[in-house]
Image (cartoon, rainbow, N blue to C red):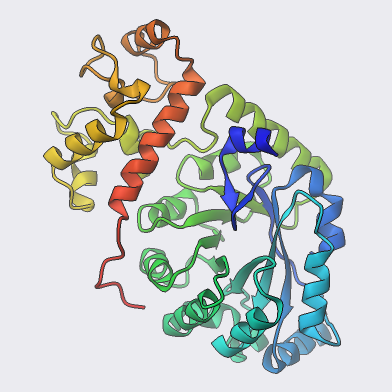
Length: 377
């Protein structure tokens, strides 16, 4: 697993993720056996969805009578606990997609089973019986209820994911509210929307992002990674052939480039992580409105990057355009001055990109240093 960490440097719930591919929940389908069959080509699995209280269990029965698949346990708590325990000993980071009608239902579950997996609040299900029960998509239009549920779970020091769908509410406002409430992960069903929604969420909060919906082609996956996603999740197309191909292709890219989800450069539509590739603010370009948007003046930006590369290989580069690799572009962009400097430093392009990733993390930590007080939640 250390090889996986060196390749992706990816943790979820303080566990190493062997590959940035997750299984998304599908009620009545994604249980432990389903995940274990695919365990060689996934890093995480969200089992469920599981209904956890009387209201949502009754809604599940209504859905089953209408022909949908559902999970039913004589005792939901023991049933969920049993499914998660079946993943012990595997390399799969476990998560459980949960549908509850109140914060108290989630709190009761956490009190009973503890921190055995990622708790994923289902704010995604759009079936009317579940919405009427106060679960699923109901929570997207009742942010206060959703935030109360996050806060209830965080009392137990759990890792909390929220599964949402786009197109229902303003995702930037929602993601900032989830950040303020204490969520750790946003699992985003993009519906018919593209990578722009991922970029908006990445630029609005520091939470881990999983992109979902039609993530079964390499090009679509890389599009999400290059605009802010940390992982992708697969549902209906989670066959072994698809997962094996994606896993192999992502690993090859990570080994070749050094930063598996490196952003596009800002001037090419990248998210705020791309500030690591931007040059000095000396001309009119997308850098200036980006700095204005995060309320950072030019002097602060220059000082931040200089401080962040101090003592690292990126502080060198007297013969580059601005005297330091801190201001140099992505390795895929041709530049003889950057490449000459890397050669002189005996620094490979993958190592260069790993250092750029460190720089990006420091920049993002500064941007999202604290939750703004005016975020409603």
